[in-house]
Amino acid sequence: MRLSDSAREALKWDADGLLPAIVQDAHSHQVLMMAYMNRDALDRTLKTGEAVFWSRSRGEIWHKGATSGNVQRVVEIRVDCDADTLLLRVEPAGPACHTGQTTCFFRTLSEFDDKPEQL
Image (cartoon, rainbow, N blue to C red):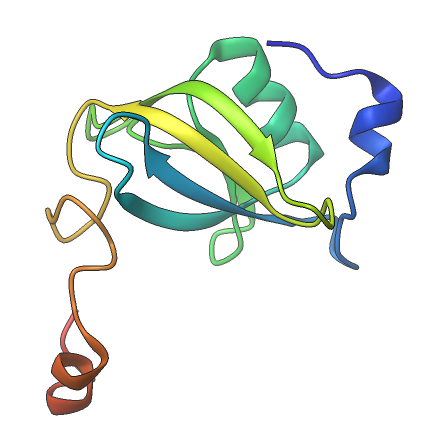
């Protein structure tokens, strides 16, 4: 995958140099997770073909599945109409969520309201 320098700069990076990245299963269309990418994470994703993100909590690059084996092979990257959010369509090698759930969006708002402290 390639991206020209002009296209990379036309993306609307936030003040911290980040873009939200929504991750979707390319086959089921299920939304798996949301993370952030900086320019380096996007470049690494394009180079390796696997999802790489910027971890805001750790302050470092995060290759999804590097330790768990649950990598996400990127099939396609789409950009939204405002150029401020990316959609990564992936083929996941396992669950997306650190809890072991297929998707990070496994709770309804009412379930969360009942037990907001549970992950």
